[in-house]
Picture 1 (tube, rainbow, N blue to C red):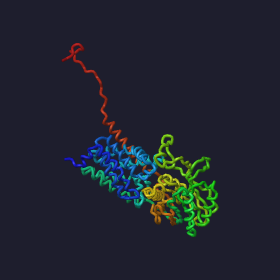
Picture 2: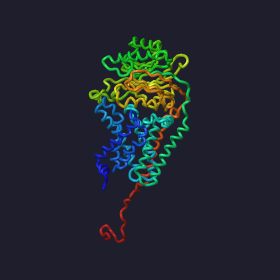
Picture 3: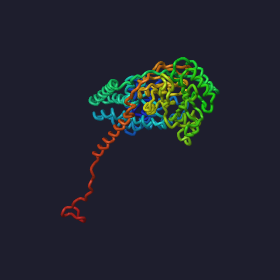
Picture 4: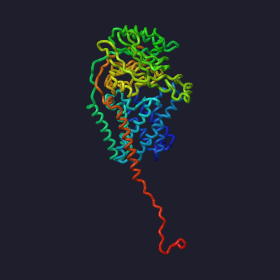
Length: 533
């Protein structure tokens, strides 16, 4: 007699619902729940369901449905801003998991052989990584919720990130899930042995990287202050937020600081057209004895003459703006611009989508602090969710940055998982590059991480109005990830290419030979008029 679970899974509707739920489970591994260990088993229910699909088409459907569940769960905090459009976006991006569902069934469906089980541990993670690569394109929302990012507080995983970036961590996490799926689903001893061996190999890989990977060489410290004004609401919120930033910054006088960092959109007017604001910031810089990095969210003109609203990091010294600026290059879809506005502009009527597109910067910038002693510190600014892009922080370090600084807001998402999840990305970027990173926000979570990705001091929680002073360890040297880049992605693509070539060759060998259409031979006594009977 079939069990209730078996009867439910025989129904396509119940299977579809189970796929959506199973796909959403990995979200629990990210902050705020931050059940990092759950990431290593979270995909198993989804993979078990997909491998049992009756057809490849059904497996692709359940891959898509699981992708929808994953995207909604990881981005659920966007619902107040996007409303029903969040479901539309999840449905579109969830299509990326349809080929992955088909792939899982093709290598793990039925009773896989020893070779198929072994191949699955390499092929399934590679397929997942290609999905992460595609959706990391800024136009599709950027690399938010990469599975490897859930390991931001696990020291061995951070060391792995220094070798192959967050991509290599994602490969490891999915490989463990795949090996566990083999152990659970396959009764035959040899494929199950393959799963166990795969788990051992994953553990040995982490241990080897932990032993072999070079650690950043410490080279002094820098004292960085973060100013977090907290939640400021009302019609005159921008002016009162600036005043609150001033008040908090004055309390930092005499702290022997190298740099003071304000959050994203901390200044709401172009300093070139508001000399009074620039003068007030210069007074603050003289009072604390350090440059102040502010972020201007206002209509302005860039060096190329482009006019519009920019998100601009501006370094201000004792004499006013120093001339060092950086314009945000990668904008948040719908939050700061609407893709294909002519077709999708209606999104502004159902959520908090951007009423006017922001303008993009054209190049990354490394800023240099003047002064004696610890002066000359080179740092690379990032704005908001640019901290999610591994390539941007890698480029800044290759250009000489000793410190990474991200200015963010997250004001809209107070009380959700977004602030903690955003801050955790700084740990990954620090570990990948071997450079410390400061994540400064208006309303929290603000945090600082050292060159190994370890947290420096205590973070500043959401909705607090305060400052934080951090003695940030600096480091020199080059991590393998900075040196070799996204090699883990290329390795995954090579694995999938090898699979396609192998399957193609196998199909060619199985193809039947041509059938020769030859008319039947006639005997000596046979003719067209008198055939032999």
